[in-house]
Length: 84
Image 1 (cartoon, helix red, strand yellow):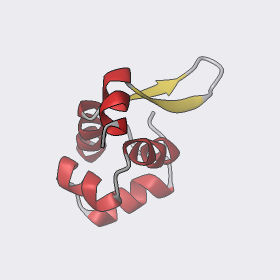
Image 2: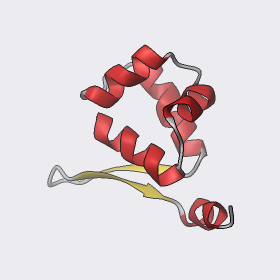
Image 3: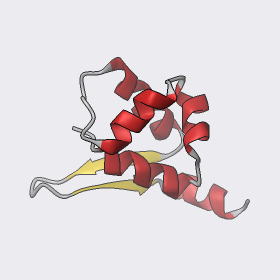
Image 4: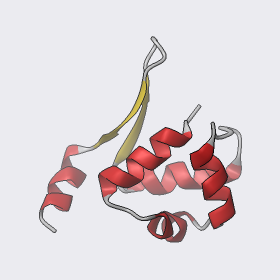
């Protein structure tokens, strides 16, 4: 399950505002605020839109066996963002 903290961290890694994510995913601000404020429902089509938008931008969501969670910015996207 994707955690709201992972969504916020992914936005931060990309340098995206909430508005940037809204535009990329096509969801509403109220839906995003609910997701970022609590555990997101992994069965939700809205969550799938957010995950897809962030994944296309180079984010990989990580959940380890020990329960640790995080996000990774793939190397090619990290290089591209440094060039800005």
